Amino acid sequence: MAHQEKLLKDADFSPLFSQLMALTQVTNVEFGRLAQRSILSPGSRRVILVSSDVVFGLARMFEIFGDTLGETGIRVFRNLDDALEWVLAKSTTA
View 1: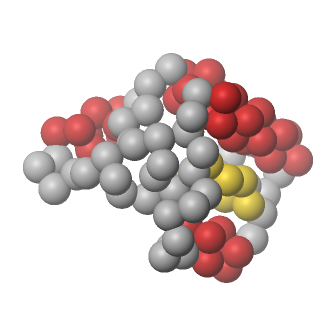
View 2 (view 1 turned 60 degrees about the vertical axis):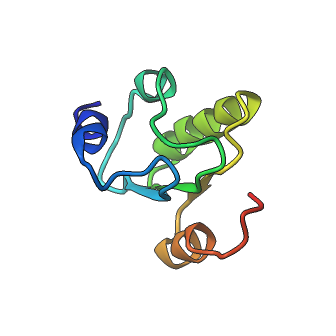
């Protein structure tokens, strides 16, 4: 949440940016708080990079919840190369 506030205050920030959240060292995440407010546009590509099964499951639920709200650009990956390939793809189709 603090990171979102910092971005919103940055004059160079655009809600059209893509995002990579590297949560490979995290064992638990409060995705509910993140789902309450999005500062990125619904079509922005957002990658959640995870390593643990628990965080993978939580991130997938976050992805599905976002999709129901029209945020179609959220994907969960376990591999950095795959995550970067997807988030940096030129296509605007999620």
